[in-house]
Length: 288
Image 1 (cartoon, rainbow, N blue to C red):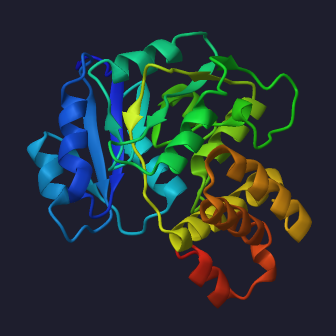
Image 2: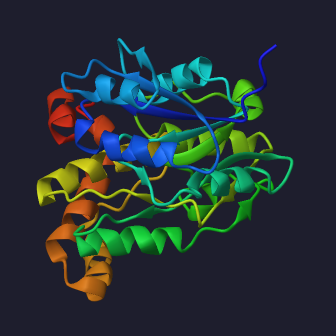
């Protein structure tokens, strides 16, 4: 009988060759040995070959969705814990996986653990500040305590850099949804009585330098997802939007950046009122 697998690392991939070699090299440098499984959604670049060169088992995906493909990866892996990365999220040091597993062991009811994203060298400083400020708000261990899920840091989890306990997932899997499957999983698991842990040492290098239009479209997807998961609607009244933009603008002077985020979130929160073709045009994920 083969020995049980403590942890698997699972990565969904589509044309990820730009960063994938560095990501998988960092996974292989970890102090903890892990099974490595990549779900490839029909890449036309060298992604699958890069994954196999690093000893990964490559699973072909016919129809990608953020929730469905991660459920597939849970089925295809053997670890008691499954650490998820994205194709451009590179573990920052060899202790990344150990730190995630230590957080998973913080209490018997921990179902989820995650670490922070750190900006890559040369990343947009405004986006970097926003991400760093967000992760600075995380508590090390959180339980729902009878509260309803909301958009705050206590209910946050990310599959960019997060670990899932198999026994918890078997009871409460990812929702088969196209976006924000990680936020939904945290809401569902914590509402079911599981705990969520944060591992500040388990950092990855991950950042995007979006144009203003791309940022608006990304915020549109996020605003839509927050409404679907939590019922949250970002403000749309011009006066309220103006106050929000001015508040963020005071930190860094990036008016266009904050205006794009605020407008995209407001539109996304009201996406059901828009025609299909407009939703698809606004969505960075091309969701109708």
